[in-house]
Structures are given as structure tokens and as C-alpha cells.
Image (tube, rainbow, N blue to C red; front, side, top):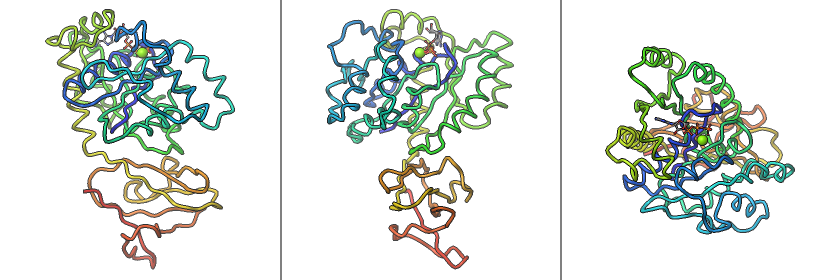
Length: 343
Ligand SMILES: Nc1ncnc2c1ncn2[C@@H]1O[C@H](COP(=O)(O)OP(=O)(O)OP(=O)(O)O)[C@@H](O)[C@H]1O
Ligand SMILES: [Mg+2]
């Protein structure tokens, strides 16, 4: 199961259209997909035509349940849309939940707790539509996800925003239990305009890594589908919108196939800080690879491609190997490196 959050603090860049139609495309390609509307504006909920749904089957109920420390039963909230496509609606009342959450130790971990409660072997993708800000709901999504997709529409403000977003998200990812991959998706693209052509050149400079090959063209059928409460595949499966989102689903499936979340953990009740260093950090201590302390057990999930990696922990400035891992080798400095192999 891979959790994808669709995030950009800029409004109107195609987050909701992407969340809804990427979910639709993945489901059509046989991937069991859950779309989660985490925006109090509830645009994904309206885009799928949900005006009336059974009481208590929404994301607010998930928050209430977890805040009350009640056992999580995901099937209580999930609506079945069609084969392989499942949905949890949002509601405007979600905007008021932040006050209720203040003081709760789980405030930023609600969605992570929810996605962890899903039986991972049963699901292929969870897609989260985020609101247009980097507030606590978006942080909740980022804490829970393996992949961030940032839609970038063709406008001068997008370019201004990307650099800020890169800075902010690297701060947000510090001390995160997971280390999500970040991808950028060009949306609402009109190839006829010169501005758009130049935009592509400029964007390659702004985003040297993670720019997806798929480009989502400006397509009126995508707008129509949202107004009619349908995915593009239900509304016009032959449109360019349907073709682009099918392509995106294929690219995402391909790109995420090789991403494996590997959990590193260590018991160190008296430690003040624990960092992971290794081949994947270029042996540099980096805030992004700080382990998170949960009752003396320090944890970090890192997304790694197939391969063999050497690593160590830094416990309060002291470099140590992972004594719980039988795989290790001489580090040529008189100590050992631990080894993780992903086949
Ligand atoms: N590829 C596209 N072609 C044509 N119209 C599009 C396309 N993508 C999005 N739109 C339209 O642009 C508007 C903004 O899209 P959308 O609601 O997906 O953005 P958003 O980033 O989710 O906005 P918000 O920040 O308010 O949540 C909508 O009217 C939508 O129908
Ligand atoms: Mg939206």
C-alpha cells in the first residue's frame, strides 16, 4: 500500500482534479484505491457527486474516533464508489477541528494512525486531497504519506511558490517518521501559448528532480466531469483528460513499484536524539533522517530502491551500528556498519 498526498499551498492548481482522477485511473487499472478528502472545502466530495451520504461516514468521524482513543474500524467510514474505488468524504466542520485538537498528543498523527489501521495487503493506493495551505491537515497528510505529488499549474505564481514549497516541505519533513518521495506534476497545460512553452523550460531549472513526465493538459471535460459529480472515466473516457490521468496512473505505478518503506528502529530510552546515517544520506547527519521517539523506541521509515545499503545510528553524537541487525560488515575504522538489503 502506498499513501500519496496531493499537496500545494497554492490554490486552484489542480489538486482536487488530480486526486479524483488519479484515483479513478488507478482503480480502472485494477488497483484498489481509497480517496480521502482532507479539505474542509469538500471539493473532492462534490466532484464525486456526494451531497448526501450516511451520517458518520466522513473524515470528521475518523478524527473524532481517534481523538476519543476508540479502536479504529476503517470500514465504518469508507464508501464504495465502484469496483476498486473507495472514498471518505469531507465536511466543512473539519475546519473547526483544529481547536479541538489543540492539546491532543495525536494532533498531527490522526491520518497516519488511520492509514496504519488499513490492512496494507488489501490496498494498493490511498490518495489524500489536501487543502490549499500548509496547516495541520496538510501536515497530517505529509506525516502519513510515502509520496507527495505537487501539482504545478502554468502561472507566474506557481514558479514563485515552488521554491518556497521546497524550503517549507524540507522543514516539514524534518523529524517525520516517514521520508516521502516528492514529485511535481504540470497541470492545466495549454501547449498553444508561448508562456506555457517557456514555462516548461523554466520549470526544469526550478525542479531538477522529481518532475513527472506526464503533463495534464487543459481539458474542458475535466471541468465538466467535476461539475457533474463524476470522474473523467465516468464522464468522457475518450477525452484528453482521461488519457492524461491514465498516463499519470501508469507513471506513478511504475515509479512507486521500486519504492520500499524500510523501518529502522532502536531502543534508547535515555537518548536525547537519534539520527540515521548511511549510503542513502551520503553519510551526512540530516534533520530529515532524525528518528522519532515513541516511549523510548526511536523509529524512522525510509523509502529505498532495490539495493544494498550500509548505515549507522548517531545516538547523542555517538556513531554506533545496529546491534539488532545480524547483517553487518567491517567499516575499516575499527567498528562495523550495519547492512540493509532490498531485493
Ligand atoms: N487539466 C485541467 N483542465 C481544465 N480545467 C482544470 C484542469 N485541472 C483543474 N481544472 C479546473 O481548475 C479549477 C481548480 O482546480 P482544482 O479544484 O482541482 O484545484 P485545487 O488545487 O484543488 O484548488 P484548491 O486549492 O481550492 O483546493 C477547477 O475549476 C477545475 O475544474
Ligand atoms: Mg482542491
